[in-house]
Length: 104
Image (tube, rainbow, N blue to C red):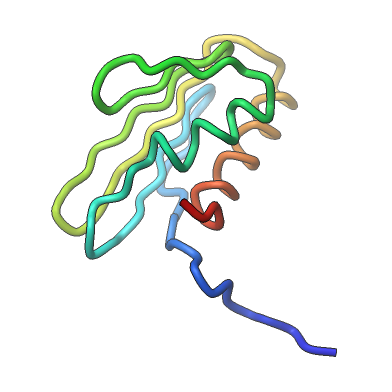
């Protein structure tokens, strides 16, 4: 039996702020990430109908996802407009896991 403490291709994504209906994540990196490719598939699997809403934004059925790509970090903001508190928690957890471990 073996235990892997770190996923081979994992990205560092930290939850920096949580408020009612909104979360902000911070991710350090050496090259900018294509967050649309990383997160849109997860939204599609959750059947939330992701639609591009600009250059750095995705609109989905119960909210929006915006990001900035700076030189050495990205800031991702997740905002919810609808859905129960439990659904918001589950969607945010699934998107955070996709941001950390999804291989593009």
